[in-house]
Amino acid sequence: MQHTAVRIDHLTAGYARTTVLRELSATLPGGQITALVGPNGSGKSTLLGVLAGTVTIDSGTVAHTLGRPAFVVQHTAIPPTLPITVREAVAMGRWAHRGPWRRLTRDDRALIGTCLERMDLTALATRRLDTLSGGQRQRTLLAQALAQQAELLLLDEPATGLDTASQAAISRVLAEVAATGVTVMQATHDRDEAARADHCLLLREGQLIAAGRPEEVLVST
Image 1 (tube, one colour):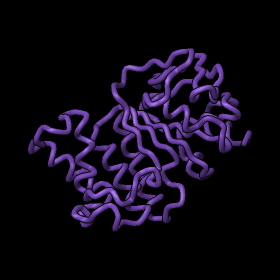
Image 2 (cartoon, helix red, strand yellow):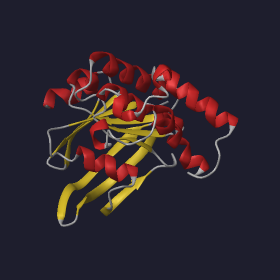
Image 3 (cartoon, helix red, strand yellow):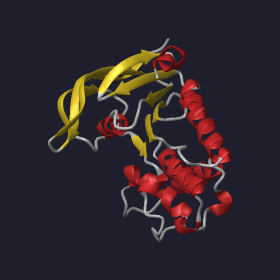
Image 4 (cartoon, helix red, strand yellow):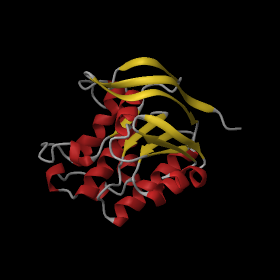
């Protein structure tokens, strides 16, 4: 039976003196993929930021019991010259559990290896981020998020500008993690990707225009 994993009620939020989301109410079904669609400036990134805890709520509520979410930003938001390797970047995903200063356990290292393999990054584990393609960096960020073992996974247009192989890999892994009970929400401009989701939210000018099955919602875009 489908259950509600996240409930958003009358949410108003934004930045400084600029209100972006206005009286927005929506739900995210648990263990499913929700596609967040809408034109640029509609509030998609702001809503993800609210759920991730990086954007302050002005009024309204967001309720869930899923613990701290894992947030995957676009690879262009990360300095490509960051002097760390792929394995080190993925290992940072364990900081939520271990802290940045505690030594990784054998189980931590095994999980990191599994996440690298899952995103087809094992052969690149010792490469520095500044030597990778955009698609490889994006897959690294997703592997880092998987290493957090979060019950709520948030992604801000993860496949934008990537090669077909990287897009397919990301889509496949999102379906796999949702099948294990993880609740996934991804902002996307890709109509085909949105159509593959289980649930869809359409935003426009900071308000929810439609919600439901993708085939019902996407006719409004």
